[in-house]
Length: 318
Ligand code: NDP
Image (cartoon, rainbow, N blue to C red; front, top):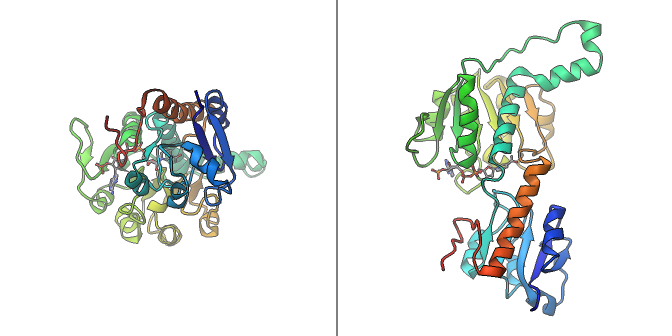
């Protein structure tokens, strides 16, 4: 039987390619924008595995594409509307990373309010011995009211982890959830007004892009802390830098940025911002699990005609 041909545009976790190569023909190209392949090769491609961008222009030159396995739970780099129009299934990697990302969110929150990275740097350069104790952190997690923007798979895990910290937990999603002990608000503004700590864990969509702006930061108030582990595009970074500089809010912890891997100099210069390089799901075990789910989606599709975890925009119907 002919092996299905799988296109891999750009870089992806090596386990994806290694496992797929056991039963599939792998065609790798450097970029999703310029595949540089002849028509016969393009016509052979039935599946794709991608970490990052998969634009409509690439789908347009793959006449027999059936399925795109996207690495990660967020799939804003894949043109899912175009995939749906063409009848191409897009899959992603939900759930296997929930715990890792929720752990990262809590660690980033603690780093932001208690300044642990700065304290460790102080010790390492000899300032503890030379100058005495590290300055007390002006902020604390104790007594905070935490608002979760997006109480989905990961948001629920963040909330569960925060309960033992004895903080109040509120949330805003477009839909109120039954059976959760957290306070619901019907808008982001209402949530930001009710809390002093906002954790954003929503996907990047036309509705969420730029949603956290000057107005939301002002509502959070002068003791306010913003944590973003969702997508950088959700925050207006210019408004955030201004709010952190003029005291509109107290501090921010970010794992994601508007223009990764570039981080604006405005953010880099701030002492009240704790910055991580998009490491939310970044452990060996979790990235391996994500790679396996990309592969298992493709292999199940070619073996049984069903994907495991299609995105809602391209649902699988028998
Ligand atoms: P889910 O789809 O399970 O949850 C998303 C949540 O956001 C839902 O509660 C949804 O609820 C809410 N939401 C969606 N749109 C809006 C909106 N316009 N306004 C308010 N709430 C909204 O996704 P996951 O929890 O699995 O992942 C969330 C995102 O986290 C991913 O899309 C990805 O971008 C990001 N992420 C970041 C990682 C990192 O490394 N930093 C790692 C993994 C994920 P409702 O539909 O009711 O609005």
